[in-house]
Length: 288
Ligand code: SF4
Ligand code: SF4
Image 1: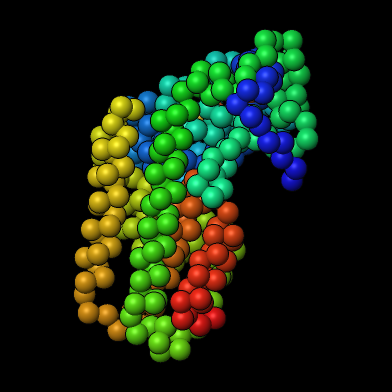
Image 2 (image 1 turned 60 degrees about the vertical axis):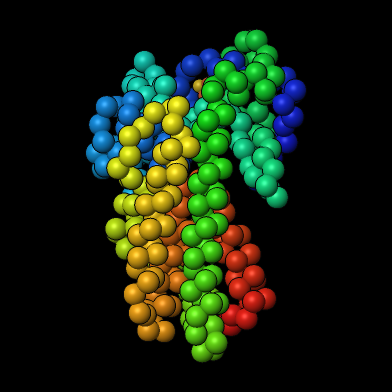
């Protein structure tokens, strides 16, 4: 699909008419910090928020509300004629909309999807409202801390993949002539996130999506540090056990599945990521 690149100084009809159009029939993926933020807003635990309001094991908001715009169901957090019930804790995708954000070669940039400004589909009245620069819009939506969280989870994705690499390349697995690991990694890249979870121990999924950590918007770095430490220490403990070649392969596949599941939760292309990682593994002695 076409994308229009945006500069921070671009002036656009970014004053929201608050009709709630984009809270219907949309897809909102959430990372674990955003899930904790939403749960905090609802004053319930992350586990309860996941179980009541999310699907795919907690990485996507359910859209099971009242039917509205274009006969589509609203987000589970949307209250008819009122709006978002978790406005202060809403995730990055909602703060950014209609803008999208991508990371390429460690640089972030903004865009909007399609050739026409997305709000015009359901809220044509936005053209009557004041124009805003992209920069002012982002400031008004308080996106910075949520962007930092997104970037931190991208780093976690790479680190989880690195664990899978170590198992494949720094053990006897690659030297044994194994081809099943890379073949399964490739298959994982084209699976839906729900299908991916069949390859991940539930304990790891819970560890990723619902860490038992207290949430405050001012303590992102502490949350991230404790979350990542708990994931790494659990993985390391399991990898310290003596493992057979078959068990090493299973762990390398489980870890890659977790990396890709986490990548999906931040909106990354799992297919592109896994193909890039397979190429790297092959260049370092793995067999396909
Ligand atoms: S579509 Fe645009 S103008 Fe309409 S409610 Fe969503 S962000 Fe606001
Ligand atoms: S979290 Fe709030 S802003 Fe985001 S889609 Fe749901 S109701 Fe709309």
